[in-house]
Structure formats: structure tokens, C-alpha cells
Length: 284
Image (cartoon, rainbow, N blue to C red; front, top):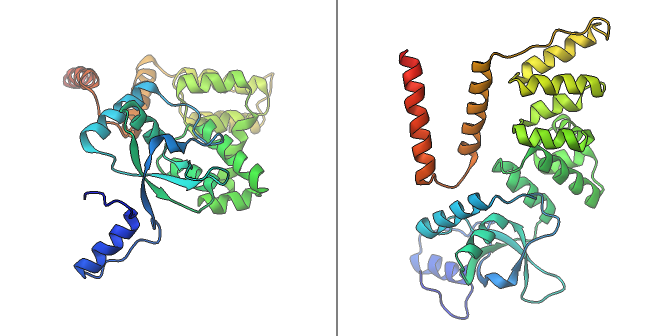
């Protein structure tokens, strides 16, 4: 639809409804769609996502170039700067549009709680690492003096789930760095955080390096809790090489599945080669 000067997208949508007479209603969830200069839109300093992968942004930009921006970003007016907007959710899309040198973008104005909306949107898109989830929830609680129950209600989580995620913040920085390298799941990291001491955490981390499952970690912790002490430690479970390789492959495929960007030619060739090798193993 061609933009009409002097009228917002909301006003044009209202005109369309009146002209069609089809009984359509304007959504209460997305009441105001605007087109704004990208230079007038600014990231939030406290947004939950901290890491932006350059290759992922380029893939997203390529997708927008081909398909258009399928989902506008969410913004709110800045209180101390007239005509300027702050990103509530959608900074990856904003950055990708910058790579395309787009002068304007479409955005939805919202008056909701920026911290809650940004965190919930990323959680719904499975778009945060476990540590980013934990830090985002902690920031939300600190800025609004929320209890764990209040934070759980805002996110649509259980209080137990919020409590378990926050335990990740107790892990040492060196352990967190290795968790990121191993691409560990939230549940695996929680098991590390629940370890009684550094020695047990080191043992569990070694199991994860060898491809152990979350279930194996829980069983190892339970065995220690049933009376296995330093003089009679629980036997360390070592996964065979094939199991470790399959676990790593499964983790990589899950990361690809979470990505909203389409595969490039190189990635398609790599996956096709892996498929051929897997078919060969299955036939053997």
C-alpha cells in the first residue's frame, strides 16, 4: 500500500476498514503501526540479548532483502527526546536493516513495560542463551523490585522455573565460559549450578565434555546424595566416542533449527554431505 503523507498507518488502516465495510477490527495488541527513520530509533542499553552474531545478522538481512520485513519491531517514544524512539523488542531486525542501509522502517508503538516485553519476546522466540535468560530475569526483578513469584507471573513461567534459571548466576565465570563453548542446554547448566561443591561441579562438567546427558548428571548427583562420599565416589560415566559425536551433531542441528534465517549455499552443501555420510552409515 502506498504511503499517504500526513497520515499514520493506524489512520490509513481505519480508513481501509471503513471503506471495505467488512467488519474488520483493529487489534488491541498492535494498535499503532508507524514508519519512522531508522536513525531516530535507538537500542536499549539494558536489553536482555548481549551477543549479536555477525553471520546471523547478514543472513537475516539477506532474508529481509528477499522477503521483506515480515515482523515490525516494537518501539516506545523516548521521554527526553521528541520524535526519537527506543527499541523494546527487535534489535536484530533493526541491525539487519542497517546492513541493508534502509533509511526507514516499520515499527509498532507500545506503551507496555519495556523490560518485560523484550524479555518475553526473546524467550518466546527461544532467542536467548541460558545465561542471557538468567541475567534478563535478574535485571527485571531488580528494576521493578519483583519477587520470583512476580517475575514468574510476568513471564508466564512457574516460580520453580525462574528459581532454577537464576541459579546459573552462581556459576563461576570460567565454568560459564566453558558452558558457552560446549553449547550446553539450560537444564545441563542448572545441574552444574546445583552441585554441592567445586569438586562435584568439576566431575559433572567432565561428564558433559564426554557427551553425558542431563539424566546422567541427575543420576550422578542422586548417587552422591544417597551416601557416596569422597572415599567411595560415584563411578564416572564416560560416553563412547560415537555417542559423543551424535550428541554434538544433535546440538548443532538444534541450533540451526532455532535460527530464523534461511540456510546459505555453503551450509546446504555441508548438510547434504552430512546426510550422505549418515545414509552410508545406516546402510552399513
